[in-house]
Image 1 (spheres, rainbow, N blue to C red):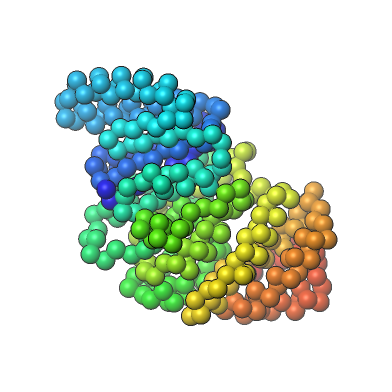
Image 2 (tube, one colour):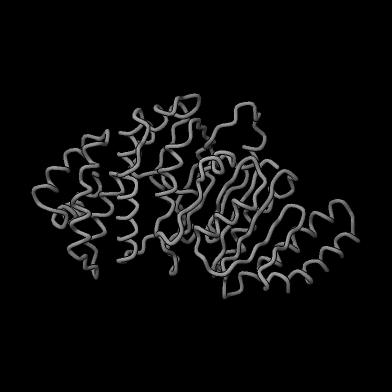
Length: 356
């Protein structure tokens, strides 16, 4: 098995079919497996999964003209539907469906990792969709040089229109470059490339370095990506528009500011500030952290958010990360926070956000 595609699912009946349909063309490859982890959905997501599995299985059987096997698979779907409600697994040759009680996206991804067999893993959020041709291109590559991480392009998708995601990968700054040079190049981005979904990751690295997602943490991708960048040693890049992040979804955590999201981001920054990074890449990783630190100050000034004195004190203490980054603009913000505090600095950032 070359590639495992992990899709965590929770109450996304309006978008799930589009997500699964975007994956379907690659499932004709017997070296690809799809792992659907239903995290306790209470809408029609489970029925959509079963219909998709039936359709995909039937299409594959039709290509081999094995009508009897198709009938058997249909019966297996009916039988296993009841078993799934009892938290058991249902699988076809290259699709695994797993039901678990609501434990969050992080644990759903972890379940997918533990049940995967591919040399590489990709994560796809079930309200987004992909251009699977990019994954097909990846599978056609010679595996003599097997990098730990492969970067992929992503865009924002909103009602049929696409917009820039803030990550400008340049092949010459990634391909055949050292880890130091790759991270140096990533620091040029306007935003921290912290999403788990626009990367192909070697499964062996995930297991060896215990790169599982931390549970019950908002923006768990940030915490996970910091550990990934610290652990990985080799990188590559594939051209082509691969991932489409759906915007404007009412129930999406992305872009939602709350006291919980502020506390989670603060926790992630404090945890990473205590990590011992490799000396030659430390300044680049602190640049990524500094970006998220400024995001923290920015969202702390959001309307209807009242941060208590403890949160402000902890945020103020973390300003030292700015001095450890490799970006002059971040270093220049340090004395502003020291002089004016986190509240006023956050408001200033709202004014000049286009330049930070």
